Image 1 (tube, protein in one colour):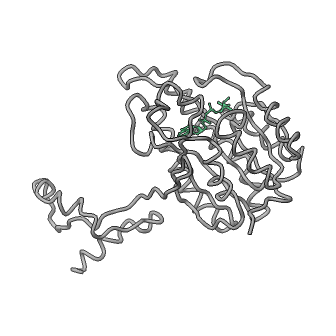
Image 2 (image 1 turned 90 degrees about the vertical axis):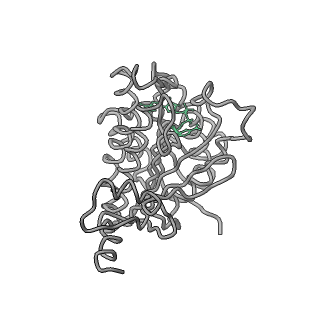
Amino acid sequence: MTLKFDGQVAIVTGAGNGLGRAYAHALAERGARVVVNDLGSTARGEGADGSAATAVVEEIVTAGGEAAANTASVSTPEGAASVVATALDAFGRIDVVVNNAGILRDKAFHKMALEDWDSVLDVHLRGSFFVTQAAFPHLRDQGYGRIVMTTSPAGLYGNFGQSNYGAAKMGIVGLARTLAHEGARANIRTNVIAPAALTRLIQGIADPSKLPPLPAELVAPVVVFLSHERCELNGQILSAGGGRVGAVVIEEARGYYAPDLSAEEVEANLGAIFDRTHTMLPAGLADTAFWLKDMVAGR
Ligand SMILES: NC(=O)c1ccc[n+]([C@@H]2O[C@H](COP(=O)([O-])OP(=O)(O)OC[C@H]3O[C@@H](n4cnc5c(N)ncnc54)[C@H](O)[C@@H]3O)[C@@H](O)[C@H]2O)c1
C-alpha cells in the first residue's frame, strides 16, 4: 500500500537545498502540503536569501503539489514560531515536522571560536528545539504527530574538527529520545535520521570519487516513512544514504559486577565490560538497572 499524506501538512526546515529539498518534494509528491522553510544562508550560516525557499515552492507547485515558503531562521524562537504560523495560516494544521536545517563551522577543537560553537549549536540544536516546541502543542491537541530530527555520523561516531557539530548532533539525539517518551501518549512519534548525501554542505569534506553515488533523493524515502502514520517506530535512529538504510542502536553490555568494585578490577575485566554476547537496548531511563538487578541477584 502506497504511503500517502493526503490531507496532511508537513514542515521541512532547511528545505531550500540538498536533503531538505528532496524531503519536501517527496512528501509533496505523496500528497502532503509542505511548508518549505529556508533562510537561504551559505553552508557556514552566513547571509540570507529568500529565493532558496521560494524556488522549491515553485518547483513543487509546478509539479502539481501544494507548498508555502517560509524564509525565517529556525535559530530564534520568533523565527521558529513563524514557521509554525506559516503552516497554520496557509494550510490550517501540522502533522509532520522534519528538523533538517543545518550549517557547518569546522575547526580543530583547540582553535574552536565561541562564535563557531554557538552558531552551529544555534541552528541545529536550538533550531530543532524551537521549531518542535512551537509545533508540539498543536500535535498534542490533535493527538497525532510525526517528528523527524537530523543527526549525523559525525556526531554519533566523532569526526576531527567537528566538536561543535558533533555536540549539536548528539544533543539532538537526546532531545529526540526524550520527545519519544513525552509524545507517546498523544501518538506523537519522534525518530532520527543520520543521512549521507553529496550536498553542498559536505563539498570539500568528502571526496565524491571515493564514494558510491549519494543523491539526496535516496535518503528521502526513509524520511517519508518516518513521517507517515504507519510508522510506529519511536526514539529510533536510522542511518541512510545511497539507498542503504540501517538502524543505529545504543546498547548496554551486561558487563562485569563486583559488590566491592575497585579500579584495578575495572582494568582487569575490560574483556567482560566490553563483551557484547549479552546486550540490551535500553528504551528509557527505567532500564538503567536492568543488568545490575540480575547480577546483584546472582543470576
Ligand atoms: N549531507 C550529508 O551527508 C549530511 C550528513 C549528516 C547530516 N546531515 C544533516 O542534514 C541536514 C541537511 O544538510 P544538507 O547536506 O542538505 O545541507 P544543505 O546546505 O544543502 O542544506 C541545508 C539548508 O539549511 C538552510 N539553513 C541553514 N541555516 C538555517 C536556519 N538558521 N534557518 C533555516 N534554514 C537554514 C540552508 O540555507 C540550506 O538551504 C543538516 O542538518 C546536516 O547537518 C547531512
